[in-house]
Length: 356
Image 1 (tube, rainbow, N blue to C red):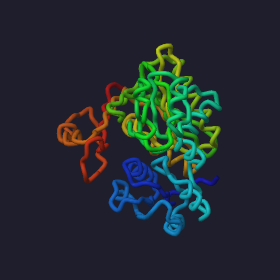
Image 2: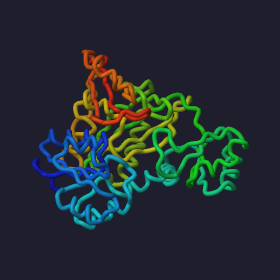
Image 3: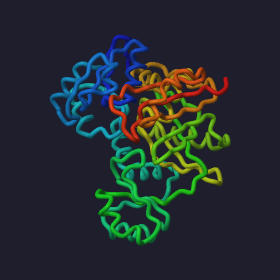
């Protein structure tokens, strides 16, 4: 593909904080940005050249959006298949490959994809009925996690099953087709953020070590406290995924590190990722700039880390500490411009550069 020149317009599906940071990175490279969102007032819309508000299933609105942009990407993976189809039919390029989005939207398909490419996962089974759950739980054993196959994030849409008593009626409580996964007694959680350019070049960021509270990412540190073999294994898995989808853009794969040092894949995110927010301040090229470079057909930037890192998510009322955080000389404060503060809502993040 020919590289898009500065002054071209990039379209982004979604108006949240990831779209906002992508738009800021695009502007840095001289691109204009159009946002398509179903929210009338969104964080991304406040930093974009233009915002289209409509349903992701409105073919006419999507066609109008497509006429104003040269390439379209997404800040979230749950883009309806019809959305990508409508944009492609309108003649605009969509990155990453919509097939990657489709696989990532369904946890059963996602884990089946991992296994088909030699990437280890927890044992799992598709659950469509209580009978399915009873049979799968008898096979997989306790403890196990029942999750919705689609949607659900930051710990939502999950039920822990420790006994046959827990399993009784769990399908009804879940309220949607599910997947039962064996619980992993992991030592730590890590993620690998990788990018693949239109020319097939691949860049890896350093492995992130992540901590979650209530199912929501709370803290990321680098370097991750793992051996070199774990890093190599994570990179190999990410490379397999990128090549399998002929992927263009940034992609993240999350893993459990087991006590024996082996890696078990949890999920992938075909987009920029919360655990990579540190790259804005702590890498030569941020994940957001890297994604824009890739989808615009530019060479990938250097992904080298410039310091040891601690990134803390500001969730709910945490953002009220902005004044103290702004006064910390080692802190880089990022607030997302969300109007309403709610419990469990990501309002911003702060990155601390610990050592150069």
